[in-house]
Image (cartoon, rainbow, N blue to C red; front, side, top):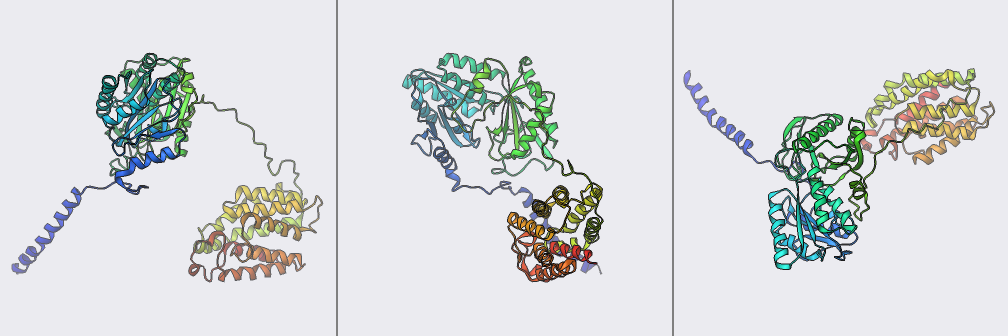
Length: 579
């Protein structure tokens, strides 16, 4: 008896080992990028192709003929009669740096490969290309590769070519003790560029921007890594504070928070960073730069701006730069804030015009007083009036739609998004609630009020189309209390609906019931004739090929034998109106 058990156990052992081995292998497997889909030609030519695209789309921009090692763009309208400004670094931070080459900002920019410092030769080539008698200022971000390569290139430019070259190192990131150079570097570019345009000396420019560097603080937060290059390592409901622009580790990981809480966290972190650098509290306000790290939709960037300006810091923001793509990290889903104390001396330089489309104009944020809405409510200037016949028709039509809610939703679940009945029942209920306010004895005003109510209470395109129809009817009717021209007005309203929506009878929409019913009324066949025509039109939709509306993208095999829900609603309304 024990023998079969032992055999079974021995047989199972290899399977268990294989399973464990596969599990261990899966754990050690290196995951690829979280978002590997890219608009590129070849991995090796990404930066060159990107630089060339920038040149094609930017005025007064050219590059040196040094590919693949030397990737330098420079101003073609530069005459070397002022101080040249050069910056650069690894690619992947666009529009920094090449996107900021132009009058009022940089004279030249050097790009390395993605997230890699440019070579010494590339930096030297840029210096030689644009430096004139007034000299050159190199703006270096605080990364080892950049510091070494830019510094050595400056030394060579001085000793070999006799050029006047100075350097400054930006270290605005307060997230960690590394003091990395990030988006605050653009404060330096902007002030130095404006001063150069004014003809200031190299010494004066360097002195001023060194003060800007001391006073600048930046801090970022991201909800993802650089997804085009790395596997995602930030949890689904987590965010990393101070994540580096090359994906370097940040200060800490926190639970994902609201836009309001994120703004508060960043502003408090910036205040702490300023304190740790021994900087005094700004007394005249702040210049704030809001940077998109690459993957945040404009909608969410504007929400962050709104929360900043609503916060306790909002009143201190005297100049606002962004929100914009300034110093990105490819497609990182994150943002950074950079602050610089406001002063009457700095403001003109920050606001000076530039010839770079990537630079957003610095604005003095304001929120003008709300203007009143001048569009009239449908009941404004309209007196309620009664007409028992109109009231009876209105109530029957609305009640029919409310009772048909489930049936219409069921039909719409087969050909649309299952809400046709719910949408029409909601609108019908709203009209019944307002019926005592309606000018039932005034056909023109009555149709105008129905148009307004449907536009406000009935969702989807059906609500807008019916609103257009009733407004078309109102425009045709005169100011009398007669409905004698009602059928003709309905035809006018339907034509307005068709003109706006682009559909016509035969397209498998509510028009396939509405138009025949209107024709029957014009031909004086009464409500009974209109109901019969609407029913016949609805039946025809069962075999129609959709050309518009909710069914347009549904396979014909699914639609076969199913009436259009909108047409069915029209059929049910006219049926309810029959004596």
